Structures are given as structure tokens and as C-alpha cells.
Length: 232
Figure 1 (tube, rainbow, N blue to C red):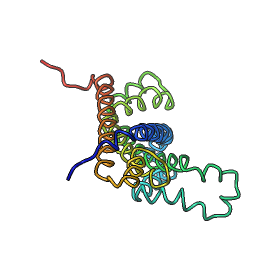
Figure 2 (figure 1 turned 60 degrees about the vertical axis):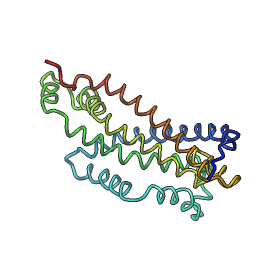
Figure 3 (figure 1 turned 30 degrees about the vertical axis):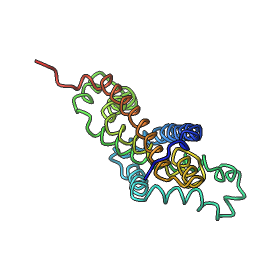
Figure 4 (figure 1 turned 90 degrees about the vertical axis):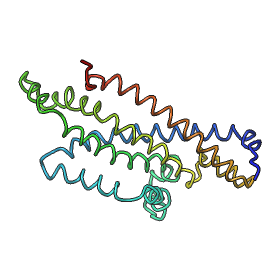
């Protein structure tokens, strides 16, 4: 078997355009997902059932169903309702990019909320007592102590979520978007070279993963350095 990567070389612009689409989906989804995850995490650590239960139910349902099912429900499922097709929302829900970003954002918000909730619960009690001792209000306590501390401690777990979301964006090709996987699918179908097409896509994902890992490692050294054991 002889591999022919000359076709891949000719179609590199298609792959690079796919990288831009992938990064666009990833960044929008993460930004929206993190924005939604913060209040959800605060609800998850509440001791009041009326506040805690809706957030728990949301994260349970989203984490308990496959990402592909969620994407299909949003992109294909909502189109069957006349109320949606006739509403002002239809231009958005008929757009593949919007639906993919919405599905990915909903998915990552549930996982991120649980990560942040775990970090909030792991906050050393001494930090809370110290903040109360200086007269901080509950709002200021969360804004200046709990949330910044939880976000720093959540970095290692959140980095895994970001990498998983990078790989999850490959599902966008199923709803007609030409991301990295979509570029590979196009090349494979046109030239009947599936191995070359998809191994090239794998290399692009590996490169993006490497960059993300390095960025998070630098962030951890900067914001979690105080937690590292000190040398004697």
C-alpha cells in the first residue's frame, strides 16, 4: 500500500479553513459555556433545595445524554415545530454554526459547572473565616475570595474539559460545517483516500491539543504556583 499525500498538500487550504472553523466553534462555546457555568456552580453549592435542584437536574440531564443526540435535537429536532419555524428565532436555528455553538455551549456549561462546584466545595474553611472576620459581605466573599480561588484550583480539570470540547467540535461536520473533520471528509469523498485524509485531520487535532496543553500548563504555573510544595 502506497500513501499519496500529494492530494493532501493540494488541499491544505481547506484544512486551514477547517482549523479556523474549529477554533471559532471552540472559543464561542467555551465563552458562553463558562458564563452559564458560573451561576450554575453557585446554585449547585447552595443548601436550599429550590436553588440547588434545578442546577443539579440541568447538569444531570446534559451530562447523562450523548453530545450527538443534543446536537441533533437542536439542529434537526426543533425544525419540526411550526412555532419555531414561524418565530423570529428561526433564522438562528436554521443556521448550522449557531446550532453547533449552542449545543456545544450547553454541553460544556454542565461539565464546567460541576468542576467549579467541586472547587467551591473544596475551598479551605480558613479562607472563608478570614473573609468573614474582616467584615466581607456574602457577595464580596464570593467575588473576591471564593470564585477566584475556585477558578484557579479548577484549572487542571478545566483544561481537560477544553481539550474534550476541542475533540467534540468534530461533530460539527455532521451538520454540514466544514471544520477539520469536515475537510477530511470532503477530501476522502472526492479522492477516495480516507487514510491520508483522516490522519491529516488527526495531526491538526494533535497540534491544537499540544498548544492548549502548553497554554494551560503556563496558566497553572502562574496561578497555582503558590500551591506547589516548597523545597527545603
